[in-house]
Amino acid sequence: MTQTTADKYKNVSFDELIEFSKHNPNRNHTLNSIEIKSVKQSEDTSLDKNGLRGYRAFNLNPSGIVSLIACVQDSGSYMISSKSARLQCISNLTTELQEKTENLKNSHLARKRKKVYDLIGATFNNARLEDKDYLELYSGVSYIMNMQFILMKSSVQEVSETGEVKETGYKGEIYFSSDPSTWKYDNPVWIADLHSRWVALPLDTTSKPIKTFLANWISTMEQTGWFIHWPDVDGTKTELIEKLSVLPTWSETDKSLKKDTLSQRLGKANTIKLFTNWMMGKIDSLEESD
Image: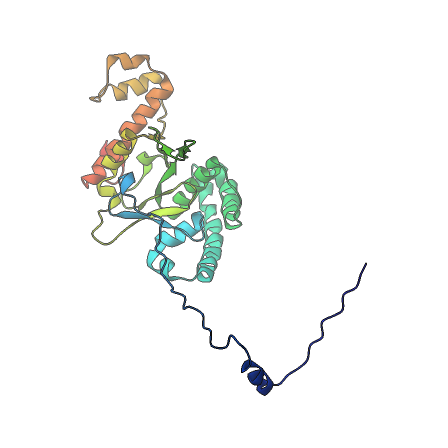
């Protein structure tokens, strides 16, 4: 193995450096100035294509349901906060939410209390969750925070060999954080990404409240290719048929449909009825209108 001679350095004074520079043949050359251009945000956050005119998808940073809750509680403060301030807020809110899971003990979610507690901690630690975990998490958090969520999961776009996006009729899926028939008018409704990456926020004070157009919006989304996970309604097939048969959309041939189909059809009818009542400002819950 050959050894190289180590470089030798000599200390020189500032005056000596200036003297050396006078003999530099390139001393009169200058560099061209660099033009700094502002970068325009290329990501389109408009939700017009999803029928939510007057709303935008506010990207959560960091993402996660706790960050989402912090944002909707005070979006103004969230937007201007530094990332370190947000992280501190999220840390405190995580503890608060976990403590509030005690309220699930005397609810229909009692058996899921421990799971919700663990999932809140998992999201704080950026753990990877399955879709079913997100749904259970939203179900628990919406209950303890008196909030109601409509969750969107866009389909993965197919790209052809030429790089063109293939148009398909299927746009994605829409879930509810709980059965809408139990929702209260006084509790806020938020539309958000299932994986808690964004939440729909109004562009300004002129944007229409979500509850004033929710019935038309959800129906339009289904018609334009979104699969809606309508809630199931408990009951025997005879009981389901009895309730569905009074609706204008009922046909005698529908009696041959499976119970699961009838259950979801009644769940859809109840949901649309509730949202329509909200649009008209009539009631607080579906039960009170019966």
